[in-house]
Length: 185
Image 1 (tube, helix red, strand yellow):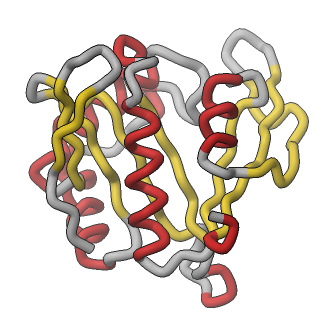
Image 2: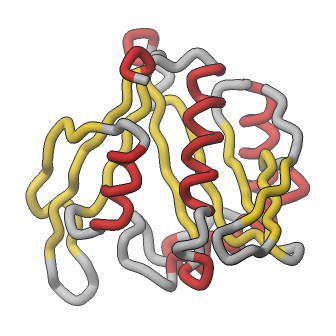
C-alpha cells in the first residue's frame, strides 16, 4: 500500500502534512505517543506503559510496510508528529481477517483543527482499499467529541462494556464499541 504524503490546510489556516509512517519515523512516533498519552486519559495506555524501544518501533513499521494490511498515518506540523492513526487486523486468524482495528490520537494543542477528521478520512479509505470489510474501535463513553466524529463518518454503536477502563484516580469509565461496514458507506 503506497500513500504519498499530502499537505492540507487545517481549520486554523496552518499547513499540515499527512503521510504513511516509515521506519525512519520510529523515534518521532514514539515521542509523539508518549506526549499525547500524557495529555488525556482517553487513550488505552499511560505514557509510562509505552515500553517499546526505538528499534522495536522501527521493526514494527518495517513489518507494517511489508504486509500492506496495517499502517500508521502521521500528521506533521513544523517537522514534528502531532497526530497519528493506525489500522491493523483485529487478529491474524482467517475467520476475522475482514475486520480492522482502528486507533487515533491528536495532541491537545491541535484539537479542533480538522486533523482528526483528515486522519479518519484517509484511514477509512486506505483500510477498505487494503481489503478490510469493516473497521472497529473502542471509545471512552464520556469522550463525546470523538464519538461525535466517529458517527459523522458512519460508525455505529455496536455495544458497550461497563467499567471497561479503570483510571489511576480510581474512577471507572464505560467503553462504547463502534464499527463501520464497507457496504454502509
